[in-house]
Image 1 (tube, rainbow, N blue to C red):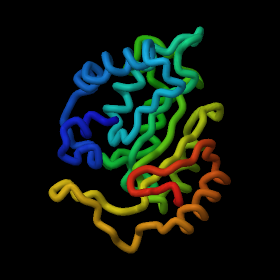
Image 2 (image 1 turned 90 degrees about the vertical axis):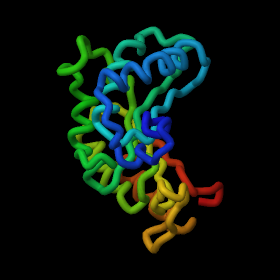
Image 3 (image 1 turned 135 degrees about the horizontal axis):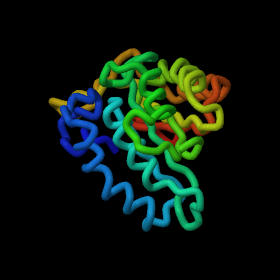
Image 4 (image 1 turned 180 degrees about the vertical axis):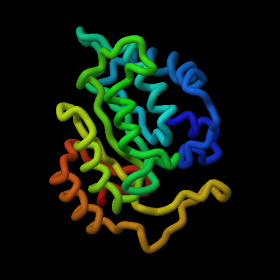
Length: 201
């Protein structure tokens, strides 16, 4: 999860945690390296990432730990971002710039070993934005990457009361299922649900 979730102040929904790429890299590195090398997990998912600085921190770490010979290592790893609109991460930075940070890390990594070994996606985002986001991920990313989507139900998190605000944008189970077909047609390979979705969604 995002560094913001560790703060327990809702900043994973804004990206406003004022940390440098280096500080975010230092915070994530030991945990992510340990999980990748010793957990025996099939998949490592870094999810609800709200800002480009944290995307860059995670890409830097994956660039160091993902190896060609991945025997006994996770077969898949991904970075999933959270977005406030069809064009922007929660931090108000553009989705295009976030994907560029994954596709072209040469400016902040000494080497680029990721190629198509790191997948990308979006989660904890309103279902109404997912189709357009998937189209952007497909447009700007390496065509060999898997696209993973698992939106929330479309409600708004209120950090002051630690509760979800239900409003008209929320998606019912049938609506979510119908939209998921559009996400698949747009190019999503893996589809699921995040906050407030259920087994019936």
